[in-house]
Length: 93
Image (cartoon, rainbow, N blue to C red; front, top):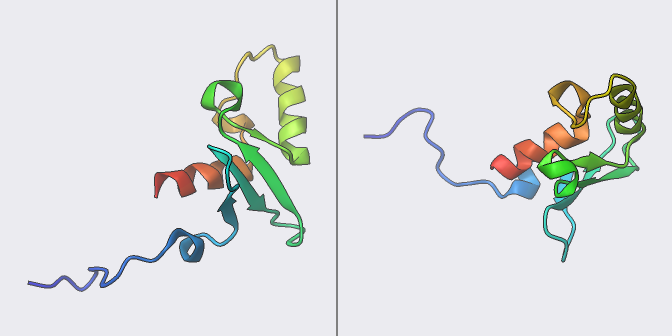
């Protein structure tokens, strides 16, 4: 019995999420394409900050400074940038 929604073939990750790519030779390091500047790629290191991730984008830097001002020791969901959230989705696949 075949379902209408059954996938006939699995798509590779680079086709599902072409804006995220793993850095070759570096475990848990990724590059994520900028939404506002498509030619720019931001580095995301998921090993950093106790597995919460670190990103090279300006937004992450600003959120981190705001978190330190509020004395938050670790980043949380509201402090994570789009690039880290996309990386987590990529890793979940």
